[in-house]
Image (tube, rainbow, N blue to C red; front, top):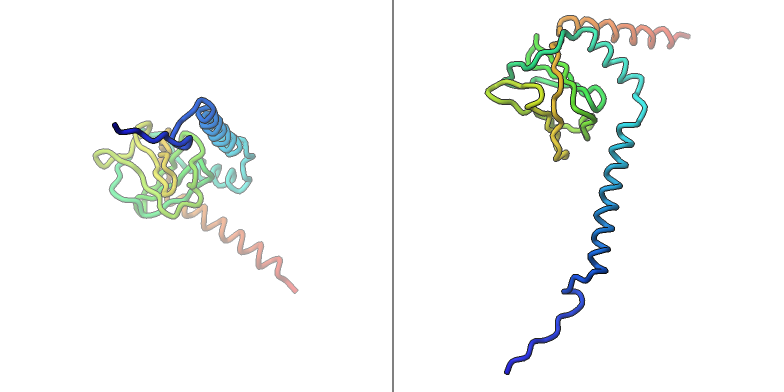
Amino acid sequence: MRTHAASSHSDCVTPSSRAGLRWVAISAVMLASAACSTLRDKPPDPAIAKRLAEVGAIAGPPVTSFRYMRMSSYEPIGLSHLLVFTGPREAWLLDLDGPCRMLDFGPFMGLTSHMNRVSTEIDSVRVRDNPIPCRIVQIRPVDSARLRHSDSERKAQVEGEVSGSSGP
């Protein structure tokens, strides 16, 4: 007759260990929601608000989609907006469905597209090291010539202020 060795307590899941696991899971959820809440409740940076106002003033009315073959560059404007350049004369201001983690730090970013089109409510921004896609809720075309002109004026103004303040 063969006897079985008694299993050790580490192999058993007891009611008290289930309660411990439940506590860990609840704590993790609470910590994650506190982090998201902190991200949402953070007061906007004045420089970001100013840049968004500048680009928003140049942007046209919302469209549902745009043709997308490749992205030449992009500029995050805070964590909820992205300025995407798809060519020398094409730029788009994307509004996202909320703060997109790592958008302002992620060196690798991409857009989803369907049949060479990026569309609102369907497509999203994907950031490396952020497993959660950031859904696009609004797309506005940006007059890239006016944007370049505005950026040049702003740069000249900043350079003028710097050179004017470095006097004898």
